[in-house]
Amino acid sequence: MADINAVARQFTDVYYQTFDSNRAGLAFLYRESSMLTFEGSPVQGVAAIIEKLTSLPFQKVQHKVTTSDAQPSSPTVASLIVNVTGLLVVDDSPNALQFSQVFHLIPDGGSYYVLNDIFRLNYGA
Image 1: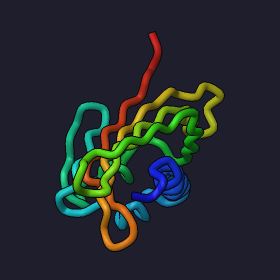
Image 2: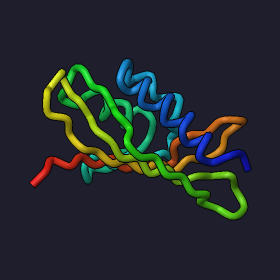
Image 3: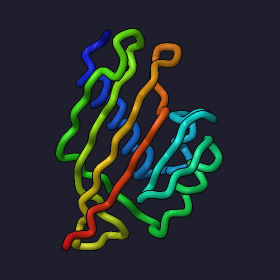
């Protein structure tokens, strides 16, 4: 298996750069079996996931990753669990939101796709 931290870093760099500039462009990272749970609401399949991401109520977004941890998720398949935390700046707000996101990545022809994606914002106390 490749260095899982390097794979996780490369994946998250691509994911967040694409999310911040063109959310619809994330379609290549999902499959019909993929599931996104955003703030407790699950959606499944590429079209539903992209619809959810592109309909989020902000125009401009910037992810600032503070931690990224990766672990193998199977003894037989080179799949990964990646846990990310960070700050989310939306629409140039001076108050960033804390977020956490967990990806379950599955190998697919030399790259990875997202089987499961769980996203949660922390709105504070």
